[in-house]
Each structure stands twice: as C-alpha cells, then as structure tokens.
Length: 234
Image (cartoon, rainbow, N blue to C red):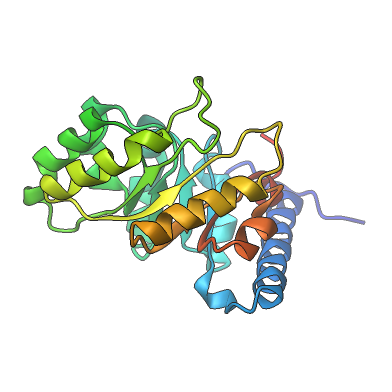
C-alpha cells in the first residue's frame, strides 16, 4: 500500500516521491539525448520550471540536489524564493517569463539569469541599474522564431539592433531563447535559433520544454526548460 501521509507543509509523501522520480527520469532522458547527439550530458542545464508551484512543491527537488529553476513572474518569485535561496544559497534562478521595465530592479536583485530581454525599454531599464550590481545576471534575448504577433520576443529584423543597443549600453548578451509556435514542428525553429546564435557569437541556447527538450538538445540547446514533465500538471 502506498504511503499517502501528509507532511507538515501539506504535501503528501507520495507527491514528493513522484516529483523526484519524474525529475530523475527527465535527467536520464537528457543524458540519452545528449549521447545521441555526441554531446556531454553535463553540458546540458535542466531548468526546472517551478512557476505557479509553491515552496513545499519545490522543496523535494532542492533536497534531491537540483539547483536550477525557472519562474515566469517577478512578483510571484519574490514571495517564495528569498527564503528558499537563504536555505539553498547555490540556487540559480532563471526568469523565463516577460519582464516589465518597471520590474527590472527587482528582477536583477533576485534572478541569476534573465532569459527574456525582448525590447529596447527593458534593455535600457536594466542598463540603468547594471553598474551598481555586485552580482550581474546572465542575459539572454528572447527571439520570436515564428514571428507570432501575440508572443513576446524580438523579430528577425530586430535582432541585430537589439544586440547592438545592449553592447552600446554596456550589457553582455550571452545567448538566445525561444518558444516555437505550438502548431508547428519545433525542430526548424530550434535550428534557426542555433544558427543565429552562431552568427552573432552567442554561447547559450535556451530552447526546448517538456514535450520537445530531446529535439532541442539534438540541435544545440544547453538550457532546457522543463516544468510539467517534472512537477506534473498545474
């Protein structure tokens, strides 16, 4: 019989075990995809997407040794991550959702990687606070590979100007991130992102989510953002 006892924070032991089991399965799949692509598994960083989940849901992964997490909203992250970071100071927190210019200071204080630079106003807001930072987050530009009007991200014709502006303002852009259209095969979009990163001399590629991270790894991703395959459906 399964143990469905409740811990002090309200999460069942079975839920905790299932989360950790799914996490290990994802890590094994990442290793397999890396080997298939003649890459080292250690070169692939799993960003466990913990958006909408509370601290008790995240804690089992932290206790299992995982340290890289992704969040969509600055305000939600401010409520749960300062205490978790105090307990686990080696956590690396990624902002993978849209950043508003008026939240840039808070984002810079909390996040170690900001993956979603997508317009001039956000870049200028970050650049304003950049010189005063002791620890400077890694910065990625979100690229709209499908040129979808409803989706955030830099359009193809805008990317050179955005990268030039960041450099002019003293910011180092280290990579690109994308979310392919849901109604199209993701691989062509991953290939476009990889080609652009190489063209512009950028190191990091954040692409691939729960349904397609293996394909992203085949095409060069070094950050894969996996949520439901680890935490279950929200």
